[in-house]
Image (cartoon, rainbow, N blue to C red; front, top):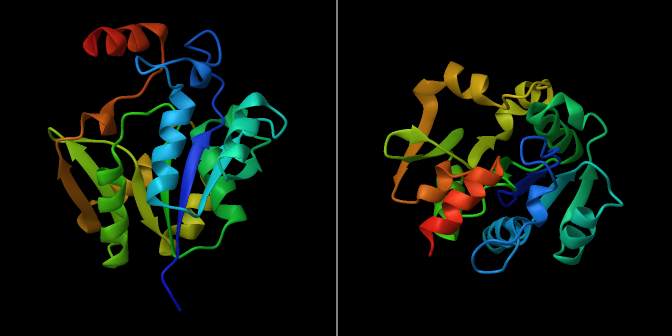
Length: 195
């Protein structure tokens, strides 16, 4: 049996700090935040699902057209941990790669590297940029129970920290792994950087 990896695009956030639905905002290349992050993940991991707030939303419609299996998180107000849990409960691969929809600058090369290390039987794989841990992070299915039990706004950070002895760290020059867009100031900074 082949080793199956599932990409998970976490797209159920409420964008409260941004003030409007940030995933639909344009980047300097005129592509939306959602479009860029979703396309990159799907290119690396064809079997990818998206966790959304509302299966009938514009975000869901876009992701559906890109071939994502949509999973609605009815407990999205409980934070990112609830979205991770939701994904794990609805899929059964050998490993997951959790990507954030508001981190559009992660490169395909980085995601490919996370996948390759999962295939080499590493149990947790995380990219690092200048000694800072970033995303996406990969988890072997041996962590299914721990991931299913998440229900907080800090995601799987605690699972990683409790298992640092087996985390495979990937050093990368990809600043995208630590660049998320939470506020309009974040977006303005990125736009100015790309001028």
